[in-house]
Image (cartoon, rainbow over all chains, first blue to last red; front, side, top):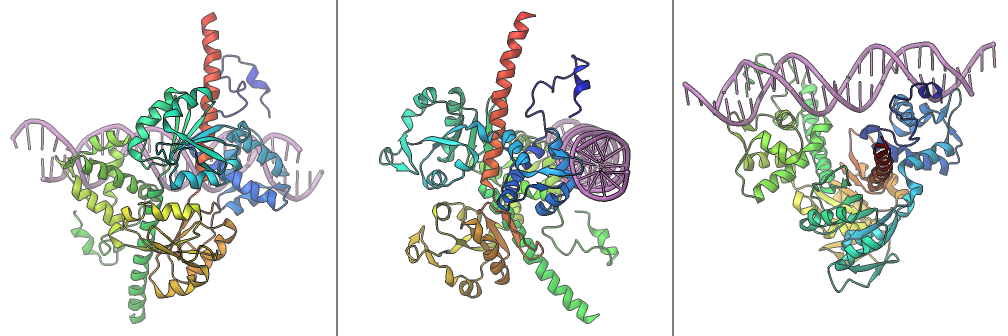
Length: 244
Length: 244
DNA sequence: TAGATTGTTAATCGATTAACAATC
DNA sequence: TAGATTGTTAATCGATTAACAATC
């Protein structure tokens, strides 16, 4: 909180101006949602305060990391006391923009698009789904999870009329690049891309989050193979040890 | 390839024995599926060879990283030539265990479970889905994507009878911990966890891949907010600049 | 006040990049 | 052979952890 001296030199970088989201490494920001989750868990349990040590044990990380991470955004704790759970949760929500209530559309009303729209994933994080879009005429007009499926042809017009922040891409990968180019033009600033193909884009204009479920599965596959190899080697070693 | 001297001292760590999957950092292994994807793309385009430089440009990473990564597993390239695309792809597949044909079950036949089973995600990576399981009687017996939904009560017995390597958890988070404990007992060595709650486990016995779609969405949300702040600040600055 | 625990700096660790000798 | 490009070592960079003074 001791920021008074920063005002002494007006020519220094004016971080005092923006109270939120200073330049922080992606590694830290990627951990914020995890803090969010565990804070919810603490709230659920009725905990009112938590020390970095206690929180770290719960999350299987170091207390240092928690303090270091949180201090990127300001002093959320109190010496000798720890962190107030409700206050910290509030601050993390603020940082992540949960209360901003961003608006999103889902493009592609296939299995995955429908699964997402009917889940609580958006609602829990303050994201509103305004509409779904699909090219298939037989889907247009149907409703899933209170969201209407519109014709893909209406997309451009819709984005101009409505304040769409985020587009969720659950359409065939072949269309991803083209659609996201259009969306960028129409002022959409976030793409949640499930197509499995990285989208080339200008990061200063639009944020793209590529979700690669396949990569995740393959990493798991690797480790499962590794475990079974270890077991084989382990058994061999036991036999060897049995001899010596 | 110059490993001849390692055989001089038989008491040194016997890495020469295991031709595959030496101890390599998770950061590197996490990148393998990405190489896999881009190699498929090269194959699709009919490319027969690729240099680390060319591949790096395509992937937006450094050539150094590619060479460094691949050399964790042995020399897959050739000086003065580059990498043979088909050969490299084959090797990456081998490392990731694509040809192992691991067997999986999906636990929870809700929207997400059905979306996954009807997608090509498993097939593309050599993972076989043996069955789905659900507690709801009205779902039991139904078929999605050629996979039958069985009663959750049959799970334990099924895992004993069949060689189940991986369990995909698409059930309510409350059940995740308990079910995964059971699965570990029944010899399952991989869990692909979509419940959104980290699963506590013994990493020497079972590999758990926690998929946190919500975290991904929140990271996107953060960056979208950041972009809009930048635009606001940018506009302010323009005005200021216009004055000076 | 004494004890506890943060905020923050310094030390360590690991991952990425650069450079270049080896070699195809 | 000369040119190209890998494999590999050394340098750099960034992220994590440890330590401790500040302070509640």
